[in-house]
Image 1 (spheres, one colour):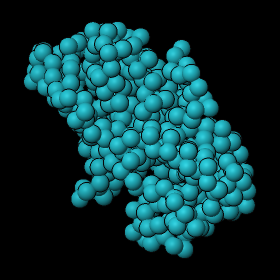
Image 2 (cartoon, one colour):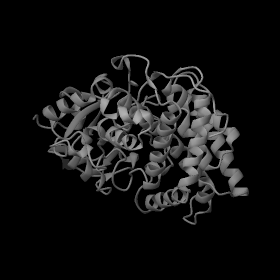
Image 3 (cartoon, helix red, strand yellow):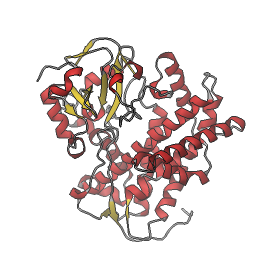
Image 4 (spheres, one colour):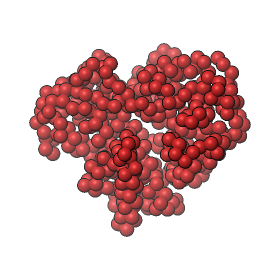
Length: 416
């Protein structure tokens, strides 16, 4: 194992380039290589040769996320801000101007997190499942007579935001445009800014409408909370919740279906076996988690982590995928059996994904897969498995497409 260098010298010390295509092609082998060369904490470089640390040790990541005083979510602490240009590609993700739940710290974060958790927890789980089934059937109706489709584009990337929009308080007529805007924003390109503006304008309109006329929805519950947050703060958090809830859930659906369509262990579930769906989803969170690496935490003072000297203001990137593959917790492979949920795919500590949000994501993903297998029981890959490609990102891991074929079936037309 090499000695950890100071982060400021990372670019010239064998640091890992976070934009490396190896994060897309074979992250398991990459994390194994990083662990062998650097240990549980490794120097990395972000775009523009900006230094940071990647925490891939399970124990170290647990320690980091359990100590918000030493490792803060306050991005203003970053010692690299003088080097960051205005057009830096990661600035939307790592910003010094983020008035949302993501970068709130201390007691105010606890109150804000409690507001969000309470609003989500009040959702009726049976209603959530019903809404998901309705939207899933509507999407499947659009391609079930064709005998072939791309499950990512026509299903996985279309469903989560529709359900979230319903829960937040949007009318069903607003759903399709929100789907288009969200996917434009995520995919980048010429329509990304327009998509972002549409999401923002729609959320602010929703907050104004629910302030005047509350309903039984997430936005109304957040606005009714007595913790003292403004309409502006509620709107910001709703935008974060929609973005954070959509893409990882879509990838969870896609990654789970890929596993079920390519691994003989899950063949039985393609004829309606429900237990195998849960097993596949659990295995994906260990082996192929949608949220791979998360930025980040900032050291509030000089310290040590995983044998590395971390300077005050250094950025630490949380490698959820790296920690999940740590051999210290994977000694006999038993983590994949018995519904073991000690994975760090939803984070850990004060800034983890709220438990009600995790439950909503699981319900949406599982219902989406079950409805699809019920409707198209003989679904199969339309291309060899080795031709499937991943999105070129070290942050979120998902398929670019998942072509499938099946026996054409009639549309339900709202009748289940």
